[in-house]
Picture 1 (tube, rainbow, N blue to C red):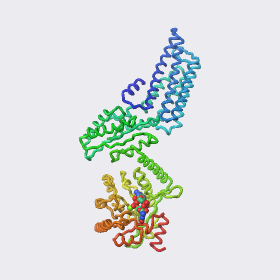
Picture 2 (picture 1 turned 90 degrees about the horizontal axis):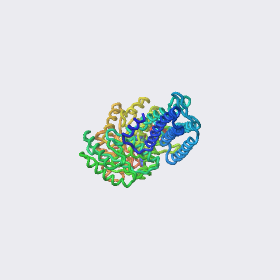
Picture 3 (picture 1 turned 90 degrees about the vertical axis):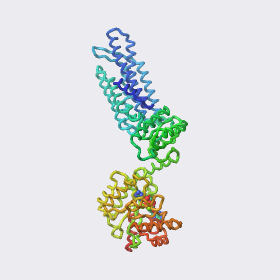
Amino acid sequence: MLFAIIIMFYREKRLALTNKRLFVFALFSCLVALVFDILSLVCIYYATYAGFSPLITRIVCKLYIMLLVCQGYCGFLYASSSIFRGRRYNKVSVFYFVAFLCGVTGIAVSPIYYFQEGRIAYSSGLATSFAYGMASFFILSTIAISLIFRKEISHRRFTALLAWQAIWLLAAAVQLFNPELLLVGFAAAFGMVILYSQLENPNEYIDRQTGLFTRNAFTAYITDLFNHEKAFSCLCVRAVYLSQETDVDVQNDVLMRSVGALKRIGKDPVFRIGDESFCVIYKNAEELKNKMKAMEEIVRGVTDVPAKAAFIVIRDNTIFQDPEELLKFIRIHEDSDRSIVEADEIHIDRMRHDKEVWSIIDAALAEDRVEVFYQPFYTVEKKIFTAAEALVRIRNQDGTLVPPGDFIPVAERNGQIIPLGIRVFEKVCQFLATGRAQAIGLENIEINISAAQFDLRNPHQFVTKYMQKYQIKPEWINLEITETASNDVRQNLLLNMNKLIAKGVSFSLDDFGTGRSNLDYFVTMPVQNVKFDYKFTQGYFRNEKIRHVMKGMIAIFDNLGLKVVSEGVETKEQLNTMVELGVQYIQGFYFSKPIPEEEFLSFLREKNIGA
Ligand code: C2E
Ligand code: MG
Ligand code: MG
C-alpha cells in the first residue's frame, strides 16, 4: 500500500505546501517504522533460536518503538499545520518537539526485553510502555486539536484526520492486549491510504486539461504562504476575447498555446483559476514587472482572434489581512473590464467597506430591521395622492436609519439585493393587504427593482408568489426599473417583465435623465411610466438646454402614451412649472419626504379626505 502511494504521489507534480512536506514525513516515517517492525521480529527470532546478538536485537527493537513515537509526532505536526498559524504554530511545534525528544530519550535510556514463543514475538519493558504512552499522547493530542478546532478545518480534513488517528489508536489498544496480532503497522499504513485518498491526492490539484495547478491548489498554496508569514507577489492574467463569436476550437487552441507559453516563462507555479484566467505566484515583487510584459506579449502572440490581456496585480500580499481577503479580491476583480487592476489601499478599503455593509444588511435581514418608507405622489389630474414609492431603509440597533444609497449598491454587487428585494416586496404586500391605504385614495405603490433581482432562473416568481399569498391585485403594484448597460441582463429583464405584464403588473422606467438612460431603452422596454430623475427635474430650473430637452421629451412621451412622474420637486414654483409642462405625477420633498407607514397613512387621510 505504501509503495503504491509513494509511486502515485511522486509521479504527479506537486506544490511546495507545508502539508505536503509533512505528509511525506509521515509517509516515510510509516515506511521506515514498518521496515523496523519486520526487522525487529526477524532479530527477535534469530536472537532466541540462533544466538543472534541480544544487544543489536534490543537496539533494533528500540529503534522500532522510537519510530512509532515519531509516527505519532508526524501525525500531530501534519494536523497542527492546517490548524495553527504563524506564531501559535511555532509555539505548538516547539512544545511538541521537546515532548518528542523527551520520548526518544526516555526510550533510549529505559530497559527493553523481547519475547518469542512459537509464532508470537514482541518486545516489552519500560521502554515499550513509555513508547506506547508517548505515541498515545501524540495521537490523543491530534484527535483533541482536530475536535477543538474543527471549525478551522474543512469537514473533509476533519473526518480524514479523525479516521486516521482513531484507526491507529484502536489498533494499538487491540495489540496491547493481543501482542501476537501486530496490527499497528497495518493500521498506520491504512491510515496513510486514507490521508492520501482524502487529502493529499495530487490529482485534485492538477487541472486535467492544461496540466496546471487548479484553483483549489491556488487557495491551498496562498493559505499556506500566509500561515507561514511568507511574502509573495501574485499576478493574474486573463485572455479577453474582443469578438463575441469565438469558435470553441479556436478558444481551446488559444488556451493550450497560452498555457505552453506561461509554462515557458519561468519556474514559478502557474494556476488555472478560471476558464481563461491564470495566476502566477512570485517570491518577490521585482519579478512581476518583467513577467507582466512577457505575458502581454504571450496573450497577443498566441491569439489569432482579437484578444487582450486583463491583469490583476498584487505586488505585496501583506497588504491583505488574510488569504480569504486576497482570494476575495481576485474573485471580485477577475471579470473586471479593466486591463489592469492593482491591489492598492483604495481597492482594499472599498472591499472592506463592502464587507462591513454586507454584515449590516445580513443582520438587518435576520433581525427584521429592514423597513419600508413611503413617499407619496401627487396626481395632477385628480388633485390628490393616489400613488407612492416604497423606499427601503435599514434601522440600526440604536434607532438611527441607514439610507438606501449606503447599502443598495453594495447589495447589488454582492447578491444581497435578492433577499433584500424580496423582503421589501413582501412588506409592501403586507401593507397593501390591510387595504387601509386604498380606503383613503391610494391606487398603487411603486417598488424599485434592481436588474440583478431579475437575474435568477425564474426570478419573477417572487413577485407572483407574494401577490398570491397576500391577495394583491396586480393594478396595486408598479415596478420601477432602471436602465442596465449589459445586453444579457436586459434580455433577462425583458423576459421577466413580459411574464409579469401578462399577469397585469405594470412598470416604470426610473432615473430618466441621468447618464443611465437613452432613447433606445424606453423604446424597447414595455413601461407605462417614465420617472424624471431628481437631477433632471432640478436641472430644468438651472440649465437652458435641459429645459428644451425636457419639453421635447414630455411631448414624445405623450405621443407614446407614457405617463411622466417628476421626482425631486421641492418648491411651489417647481410644482407649478411641472404641472404646466403636462407632467402627470409629482413626487418630491415639497409634498413629503419618504415617511414610515403610519405617518404615510395620516398624510393620505389629511390630504385626500381632509380627515
Ligand atoms: P429612486 O428610486 O430614484 O428614489 C427616489 C429618491 O429620491 C429617494 O431617495 C427619495 O428620497 C429621493 N427624493 C425624492 N424626492 C426628493 C426631493 O424632492 N429632493 C431630494 N433631494 N431627494 C428626493 P432614497 O430613498 O434615498 O433612495 C435612493 C435610491 O435607492 C432610490 O432612488 C432607489 O434607486 C434605491 N432604492 C430605494 N429603495 C429601494 C428598494 O427597495 N430596492 C431597490 N432595488 N432600490 C431601492
Ligand atoms: Mg425609484
Ligand atoms: Mg428615481
